[in-house]
Image 1 (cartoon, rainbow, N blue to C red):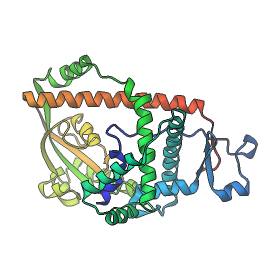
Image 2: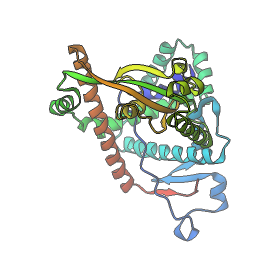
Image 3: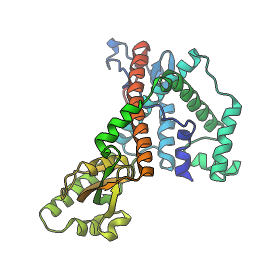
Image 4: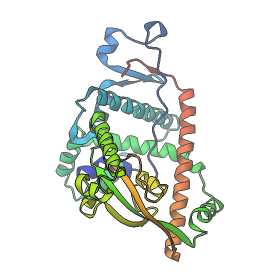
Amino acid sequence: MIATLLVLLGAVATEPAVPDAPPVAAADASPAAGAVTTSDELLDGVVAVVNGELITLGELDQLVERTAGAGGLPSDPSTLAARRREALAQRVRELLVLQQAREMSIDVTDDEVDEHVQRVQKENNFSTAQLEENLRRVGFADLAAYREVVKREMLKSHVVSVKVRARLKVADSEVDEVMRRDYGGGTDEAEIHCFHLMLRVDAFAPDVAHRAARDRLLEIRREVESQALTFSDAARKYSDDVTARDGGDLGWFATGTLEETFEKVAFNLPVNTISDVVQTPFGHHLVWVTEKRRKPISPERKAALASAVRERLYQEKYVGAMATWFEQLEKQAEIKKLIEL
């Protein structure tokens, strides 16, 4: 249930969420450059100002806690600082878009928010009390706080639809070109037989835990490359994944089957070569591809691939268009960073 609630806001809009804003324009750290360092400002915890609107340290910590769910604020100082910087970029992005919504007189009604909340309850079979309990577990003070966030996400989605999405189009010729290049014009596609070894590390674990996992995987790779043991034996001995019992064997698969980052590495890996360490939301991996082949594509599979290609091309255009739009917003905005995180 908690995992579902963590992604509920992504379901507010059917299109991709607004990507991260460009880095905040930082003022020089010295008082002579205009950075606010008075005791009153530090006491108030004002971190940045975006076109006259304040961002406080308390807001950033709420965002960090909400992202971490039941884990709360990281105890490791360097990890906490990194999460706060990420939250600051997110909050700057949000304010820039919400300010655009006001300029465009875009609003979201209570009925629209009600509809979203009711859909969440129905999809999760939650009573109101159960919804409120689970919202608290993932960092929301109460249902009213959740409704406010839903409203902001809807506003952002409406603005992006007008400013960015409405201007994007993927031509049939672009899809045809990818189909010719990657799928033999829709006649056949690549498949790989892949093994992996995973060390599970929570995405919000301290950086030291991620470094330790990467270092350990590099040690294991050296063991395998020195022929002290086989990759499959190493997977049985060390892997945290359920495939460990099968020596890490994932079987044969085509594109669009596994996690995107993992899949990209696997399909570009030469046969009988062990990858560098790959990080995914599930942990850190070593990847080993033992065989590659091509297989015929059925008409149904061809249609599905063409649809996936169109979506991928749209996403690529979307990310580029959003980056350009945010660059323009940032140039036009007055953004002051007051406290170094």
